Amino acid sequence: MAPPAEFESYYGRPVIKAPAWRARDIAGYFFLGGLAGAGSVLAAGAHATGRTTTATAMKISSLAGVSLSTAALVNDLGRPGRFANMLRVIKPTSPMSVGSWLLAAYGPAAGAAAASAVTGKLPRAGVLATGAAALLGPAVATYTAVLAADTAVPAWHGAHRELPYLFAASATAAASGTALVVGPVRETGPARCAAVLAAVADEAVTKAVERRLGMVAETWHQGRAGTLLRTARTLTAAGAAVGAAFGGRSRTLAAAGGLALLAGSACTRFGVFAAGIASAEDPKYTVVPQRAAKEARRTTPTHSAERTQPT
Image: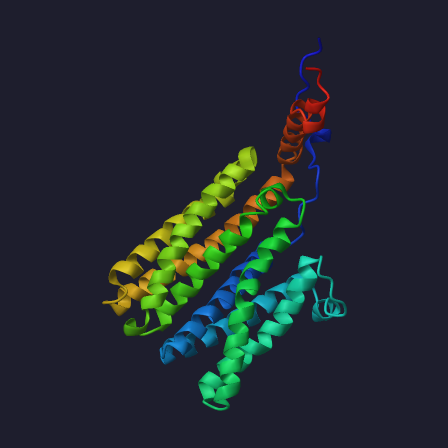
């Protein structure tokens, strides 16, 4: 019998082409969009419970986040006209098309909410805009995960079920961190709770991703991605702990915990981006899992085959 074939690639070249996205633009776009979307949800909650200072600050931060996020996307596209071209059609099966329309609808809502909060004018319109931004916020915070997972990149596509939850947890951590930085201590109770929930969810979902990816999870542990993701987990856990323990008593410690949460969320987005690029550049992460899945299907009997077996 011939020995089992060893994995080889044509001159070691990648099997798939890595995305041409620039890390600064697209990973920054992921982070800022998440910050904006989750921030609008916290802003609506703060507005509804009378935490006016925090609500106003969060509305401003969400407007800044979505503006910078859109600017990063346009910069990666090369010219603004390309973003406008994506709005010529609506394609529900395309994450990029859906995301473009989400940004187009969310941006004005976030802007109107912030403008009303700052000027004090048109309060009823401001309430409606705050509600609209809060409704669209979760989709804005997580659709970028769908966008990444819809590619053939092994470290992203293999985690397509868990990646939106990871981005949601990361976005919640960033928004909670912002609230701890900008809000008065007496108003940050909900943000502290959200930070703890985000840290727990982030850790749980990250472990689920690693189990799902199998050998491809190596890209989440090694190199630049590994450093960023380990740092992210440390910062997120530390920021949530400091915020929960001291954020209700010390303005300085609340801000320190919030900054740690923001930095941890940014490291998560940049780390996931780096892991995806690393998995696309190494051909083994494309071929070996596919061969293993094919072999598992070949050796697993189907129900129809079992029914045809003689008794």
